[in-house]
Structures are given as structure tokens and as C-alpha cells.
Image 1: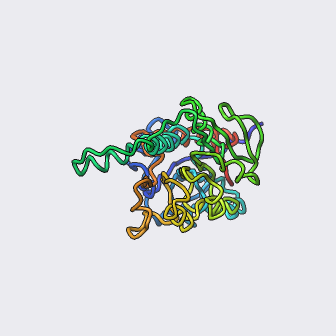
Image 2 (image 1 turned 60 degrees about the vertical axis):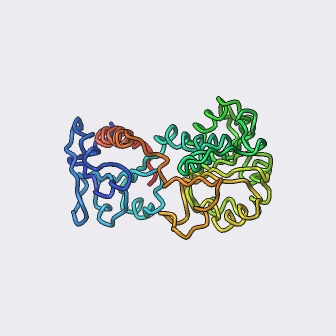
Image 3 (image 1 turned 90 degrees about the vertical axis):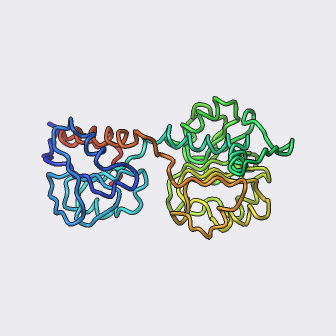
Length: 312
């Protein structure tokens, strides 16, 4: 018989305000069979409590289950959670549409110069680009590095626009819309002919500085990097050097090694670098997307079923 787990309270830590409005998030749980309450630091927890949070705290190890509202959970000590027997879940799998649209936004703007026109509009200048500069995405080659939820969604959208889509991932299982899949050890083969290299991989020791000097040297001079993964996946010093040397054409960046991006960063100053403030998942219903996942896991936890997105 399935073992049921007692769960009496869902606590929402105030740190969720980093990405969503806390009050609206709590309100989204009005139909839960247990009460939801917004809390700050200093509260004690026990095995009948669930916690939804943006940041880790040592006291969470006394709770029954902890949910990280982010997809990235590298700040959480998964070994400690496993040692204490406290399930840890994350919010991966809900960002396919939102983050892939940001990647596509960058590609469309860099191809058709939407960002440059906007720059000149602010100066009330009627600017016309060189004839050879604008291009269409159709028939251009894009390499999507990482074919999880976000990567697959990006590949689907690129395929719909008539792009030639290749991908990089450990599994060679076919992905709709992707014509060829390269293993990570063939990264250079995958990116060398791509007009766009889109990064959607998690940040792990294996993906740290995945794009650095050698990779930028392998890319086309008219290629663009789109990073909607994590900042450390790209060696920023090497990226700046590649941009300054015209070794690549530009970049669309939603994530950075240091966030917020420091004012002195050279990345602010390139005409063909688009800077997003790590808001790839930001929409006016993001809190509802996360709440739906948490609510499903409340039911799973209470009935003794496997939790969705369990990472520890």
C-alpha cells in the first residue's frame, strides 16, 4: 500500500520576490487542501511543513519537503538534503515557452536589426543599415546546445521558421525538428557552421566555460551566441575578446557571470550585443506556472507518490 505523508502547511519564503510577487503567489494556493503562508527568516520547521523558496536556508532541512522555485538549484546542498531525507524539488520543465521566446527574440532582432532601429529611434535618427547587414532566419543554421525542455522548445520554434536545426546533447534520441544531434565531445563540429549558437544547458562542472577561446575560434565570424542558460556556461572574458576582435558577430545574453551585470562590463557597449536582465522566464503569469507545479506536488506528497522534478 502506498505510504501517505502528513503535510499541514505550505510556507512561502519572502525570497520568492526575486522573481514573482509573493502575495499573488500565496493567493494562487487558495484551493490547496492545506493553508499557505508567507514567511521570512527565523522560522522553525518540522516534517509536516513544505517550503517554497528562492534561496536555501539551513532550517529547511527540518521540513518535510522543500521546493526551489527556480530551475537552477546549484546553491542548494543536495547532499545535505539526501542525508537528512528531505525531498528537494525544482521548477524545471515550465520554462519552455517563456525562455525559448527570449532566445527567438534575440535571434530575430539580431537578424533584422530591431535593437539597432530602437537605439536610433531614441535619438530620433532615421538610420538605414548597410545593404548586406540584415538577413532572414529562414535557411540559417542554428545549433541548440542542450535539448531539454527549453532546448526542445527553441528547436521547435526555429524549425517552424524554416531554420536548419542541429543540437548537442548526451543522448542521441531523435528530437522533432532537429536534423542532427552531436555528442558534447563534438561541440566544435556542431557549432562551426552555425549562424546562431543557443545555449540552454544547466550549469554543472561539465558545462562551466563551455564556450571559451577555442569555441569562439571555431565559430563563424558572422555567428551569434545566444545564452539563456547560466552565466558561467560562457567565459565572459573570452566572449568580450571575441567580440572586440570581430571573431564573432554578436550575442544575445539573458544570464551573466555576475548579476546584475556590472556597469563597467564591456558587454554593455557593443552595438550587436543584446542584454536581458535575467528575465527569460518573466511573464505576468509566471507565479501561476510555478504554483501549478507546487500544487501538483502537494497532492503527490500527501498521497505518497513520487514528486515531480525531484533533484534530491
